[in-house]
Image (cartoon, rainbow, N blue to C red; front, side):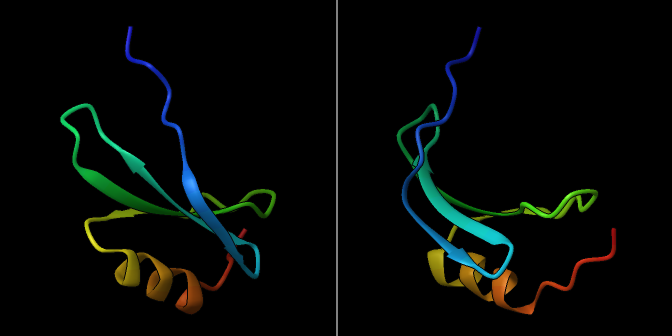
Length: 62
């Protein structure tokens, strides 16, 4: 059973949260996820700035 991700350096941009974590191989990954009800936006990027850009340009369509 895989262990859950431990996010660090979490910020909020509007309804989207951006956080960083280490994958099972020790690499750093960055994710942006919308917290609005009914919105299923989630993206994983290898670069923090790309995840923040995705969060800034996201528009909810629930």
